[in-house]
Image (tube, rainbow, N blue to C red; front, side, top):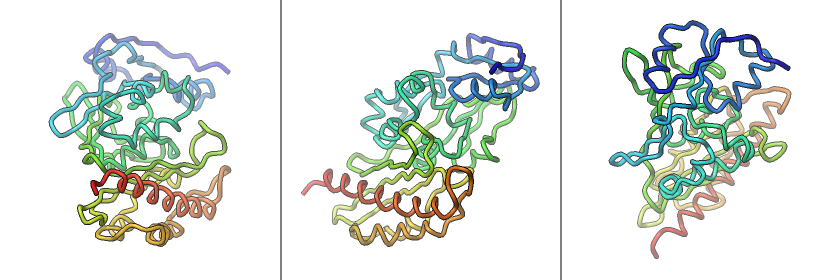
Length: 291
């Protein structure tokens, strides 16, 4: 398989990349390339121009900014796995990264590339949705912020303009001591998840659930926040029975039906994995609550 002919561009800084995006039509941005290159080779993508942003070092970082954590779009997935601030402040993302492809792909794959590719079964968009992350984008005209809930426009299409480039994501980490879990079902380790479930729980001093985040991936065209389940858990004392009962709501979600799994099977997985993720997150939160 060979890609279609295209013009290759190698900007050395962000301004150069934005200038190219502003004046070139039918351009694709090359970040890690783990999704774009196969799409080029299979002729699913037919750009006239490919803009390689790998030389833009200013887009690769993990830094704390006040109460928020900011991650550059070109930060490699493998570097995120090893990031001390991320391990301390966002263990959910680190756990999810262990299920993203394989080490070889994580060495090249980037956070921004995964978010912009927006595969329905990709892990990192699920994490971004679970964290209520904000996506930072820029163009020659300036920058703007997009809530992750508004970032998916259509199937595998982010809500950004052709001249815009994702530069970073940011979010407010949950307090120390919260529980988390990222559980997925895939045919083989490293494959895209058929269904994935992310859960985070924060407990009050009395041991009740004071905050909850439950998100599914793989069931639709975009990550699905389970707000009804989150509300049902608030103020409750966690238990296996509570989590099973709450998770049963996901047997009624609107789920995809494709060659990988039927709607009914995805609904079953959504309920089962949500229950397991909640139980694991609660157990971890309990371990961190002072006696």
